[in-house]
Length: 293
Length: 327
Image (tube, rainbow over all chains, first blue to last red; front, top):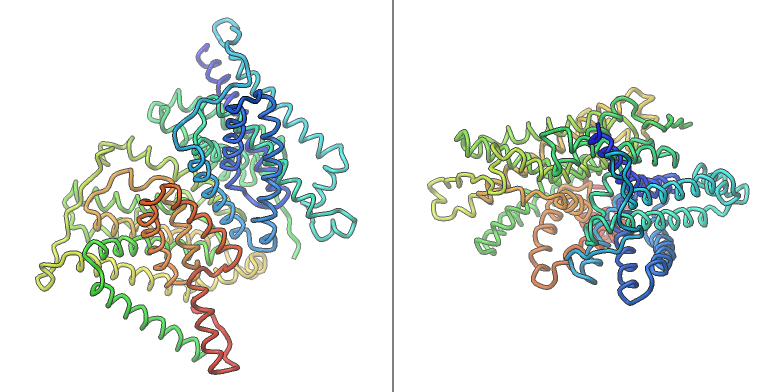
């Protein structure tokens, strides 16, 4: 039982990271109907910049603040350069371009800093607390807290602010939003900017665990995609719930299914996603989209 | 109409000429590399059907390619089947594997297939290691080298080239037949408007599944040919980036063109060879820029550019000749 609880707790902590990336993916999907395969690699690139800044002697919090601002700009630039020209094109075309971003950012990181792994400073203190036999690391608690703050701020941005309302309108119907005075293009751009910031948060949370390397986010990207699919690609709540589910089931599967072990744990989210698509194809928190001809 | 028939006949003749003349100009090693490019082209032909006509993206085409290669290797190394006789099995097993993944993923509009296959491609090399008793684990599996017939006894590279070219022609024929038949018509209809197609009685899921099954079968066939060409395979040949590379080949060549598939195969075979001497990261940068550039500037890929060029030439001689697609 102790082991079980321990596994669930550690699964929740990794799940929080998947949730963060899924939040970024869902935000972009809601805004521009694009599944951004470049999200993870963009975030890795930003993490490299943060690492470089802190190597130059800046305090960690300042490097992270600069890195987040920089990734906001990077998100906007990527949208303007790669996505805006293709907004009217079929979905496959935009996905191919995001695949191009995936392929592009990885060698840039390799080129600048080499392929070897680098230690990344943790945001949270060492150590943890014991509840009975279950040990809860401070970094796990911190990661979960960071996720909750992130999800709550995005949720309230959409629910309570005028900006969020405009963004929702722009995502829902571009043509008609223009008629009621929403600057659609600016909203889509902001969506990409915010998503890049959230992606970078995910990368900063991952980097201390996995070490910084050009391919650090590649597996995380799949977990994020799986989390978004399980959650239904619609609401921040779905992304968070999906991410935590993926994290917990992955860590349970890796420990209790003998054949899988640590090296085949990626099979768990694959099977989970296939199962959800089979049983409830729109995802657990999604709803059927109705199109008029 | 006669114009487009004429042009596709001209393309065919040009292709046959180039294919026949290549061995005369290339060294044995280069010919071997061209054969490998053709094995990739077979997988790209399948992906074109899926991506160019069904509007779905498979990011595990390299995995299905690997499944085909391993079916060929296992049947040959463990059960002693003649390498060429294993190719139908390689295609069939890959098609089945594709169906297992495609069945849940293709029921919705959208990109579920791309997402699931992205994960499958990442898991495949690990799975090969787990199934070490079948697949030989890290050390891989050998495949018997093909005995060339008597008249080519001293030129086995040429024989391998002809074999892979033959398989590629079969693959291209299959794609043409599919596109000309019922499934092809349904694919065209759903590409123009999925809702209207569905209202007219096209079963979208079934159509996309067919396209995916054929695409997977061709990936398996290409993989089988690849295994025969290499004479040895290991999990190292089928890592996750291979699948993305095959997508790049398809897009760069032109995802609705048969000739484009061959151009794409050559592109993804020779770019890494040329760039690895300069800088390991350079190949990926070229891939990425080619991919993004083609999508933003010339959606039809290199084949589309050639076609536009040819159309411009014909237009000059005949002012009212319309540009039609070769497909």
